[in-house]
Length: 381
Image 1: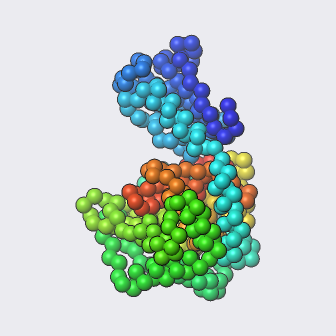
Image 2: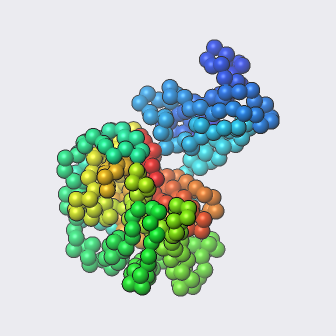
Image 3: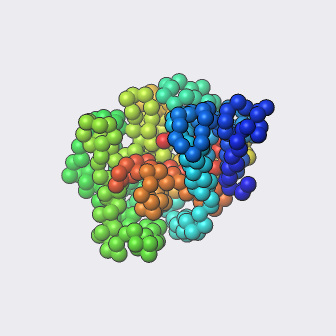
């Protein structure tokens, strides 16, 4: 097996004492393992069967039913053994470190002069580890009696052009899906001011140069700005028949609620801080890493649990302290490199081994977030 991810498949007739199922498969991904087995008689033809996820596989303490490394295929019907192998092979490929993007993203990290420095520009109080909460629950044990953010240098938020323009966008949206958005001329002007501001930064200049070399963007800065506007700000419909009610920017950076039952998106530290400051977010605790039981308060990628608008987000991952242009750059690059509905790239940025995840909604960004691979739970987007 490789260190990043691999799988092995067996015909269980050779292992009959272990299972009555015809076939089973062990999927190994770094620190995690998952055992799958198939009910039903399978050969090279498509026959009815059910794929199950074993609750007993993997290392001790791993929550396999929500492993971030395993695609949600535990209840897939009418699969063949061959299609299962193909799917797992694709998953293994996704878990290989992307050296090209790692190099680029580290260049962007170094160029991000607007990034807030932990312990200087902000301080956080992680407190205790959050408990397990089902998606859709409105109740969670509060493992943090104090806010996550103890201090943020608001003068920097106001004085740095990209941050100031970003903050002006956060109150432009109706956060409930199914409620049509109305974009006013003032809000369109604010969107354009924000894009103008980030396009002046070295981070976005490097991003544009890379995308042009890949032929994913045009050389013209105006064309690139229009491309970014469409990807991030073009409204689309999340709920059929309800009218345009969402966009990539709203979902990723502002956050949404669905049917008053679950939180979607909200993967941005500035929005988190401002909502927490106004008593709209209640931080519930951190999500522990497997290799390190407690995150460090200087870490700039965290997995958190919190409540917002009367709902609980069991796990939400976010960069901390980075500039909005840095996040725009990473997610835009991942989005443009593939036409797949979901793209996951494993990268190394500084000391952080991450999976950057981007979901498409047609021609637009559906959601995007970082996954800290040493965490022990799965982000619920």
